[in-house]
Image (cartoon, rainbow, N blue to C red; front, side, top):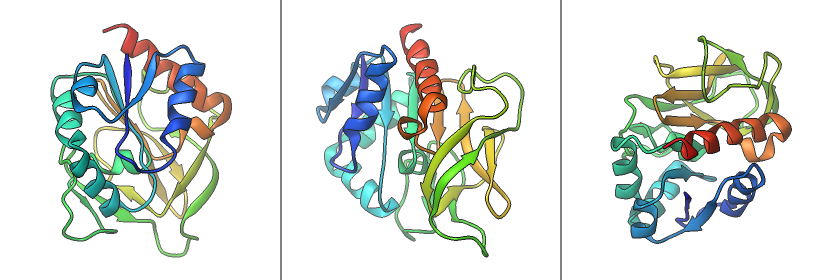
Length: 202
């Protein structure tokens, strides 16, 4: 079972339906016990970093998410759900993230329109990646964001938006995308199918 963590922020149902479309037993859940027992977890997010973090803590799912990552449960963060994995964000100074990945989430470069609200091409930055398997060299995906994480060794894909912007990370079974796979057509569905396969392999 794939738990889509329901902490009351954004259109969580679209992520659940997309996972189901590619064969995943995805269930939207606000129950920390049910989420903790899942075979995999998905943390979506839409809106501001601070508001999402506040809602995640209030739901009690922050500790469930952090524990799942530490237990090496297959985990997928999406958009602000990716950003919450970091220490904090320029968007909400003083608000601490989950701290599962070192570094900060930064404002997109000067000279570009914010938010980036468009399709953009992924650029792979390292070799074989289970997250990106089957996407090919011309994967176009859909972004809606004004902030993106610092680059580090976990980055597997970037996009060009006034410079190199982190688009996807992978650290073992911890995967995350700054773009919305559930809104990214066949490329997004392929990525979600990759995650479902990882969940079913546990």
